[in-house]
Image (tube, rainbow, N blue to C red):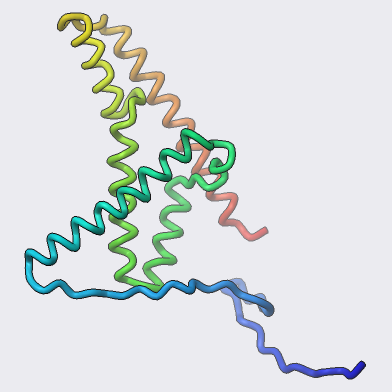
Length: 170
């Protein structure tokens, strides 16, 4: 065999270390389309909202139907901010789409029938309606909401810790 010399210049990482080898880059081409007037802008915005809503609702469906396979993909606020920062550095227009996805996601999660969220209040209103307008005892309502608050706080703290650990260099 012959020896082949290949000159290599490593990329310098933020911590000063070098990196060589295969790198993965996005192969997506984003086509920015300018609307032809306000009616066209509303039509385009509606179509994009429907597309993004489908993505978000499909993701939520996967969480409930296939949790074991998607649990590692869940992110808390730390990872979301890190992803937003990466998007802002590469494509400022993509940041608007990222913000839209975050807002649609928050709206969808907020109406889930979980205590301490708006969906939990809707459940309580439904129970009240089924009882002929008679409210549940205050301590039952407070216990229901407190349990949800505890659950969501624990989940949030857990995700923040996991996201922070994942951001640290390994």
